[in-house]
Length: 249
Image (cartoon, rainbow, N blue to C red):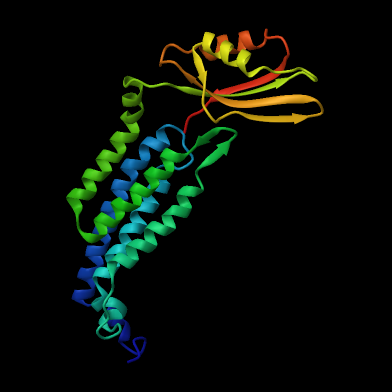
């Protein structure tokens, strides 16, 4: 049957088709609202992925999922006869595609990795969209609220619980200087830090050694602040330059 023959386009505007389109539209709109809710926290804190990114992810995930529920309405109700759509394959494709998007917001500089929380929350936004598309609206709303709450208050919870913050240190020594690891450990201990096991990396070029390592604080408030570390490292004999930055994600 030629759907584009005279009057064939009317098949797309029947009462049944309009009802299906309305249901899909409501699902997409709901997913968009929940995506914007989750993305607002990232946007508020100046992250690369903000409300629009989360809105698109959640909305598109819902659209791709919900269309699998109406194969009998495809092509104006004249889709392939007996077509059975497996929603799990649609969901698998959505989750795989979102994985590439999440990888794009993860950045690594030296020992520091950033963007992991944003990548994980984008993945959660796709799950919210899938839940909306399937029809689990209460679960989708709950997941959106929990995701937004985790991003807003998760860091405060981490700050309240006991922890051992870590810093990444890169130290460049003057040419010909012989570095003693025991002396480095002793100084770190005096400043309230312990060298993380297995984190030490040493480069040696033009008789100039450079050490890179993680230093883990003995406790949340037991490690010396950056300003003190910088001042005291500048006075250590043999050190020509250094870099300090938080080892966080």
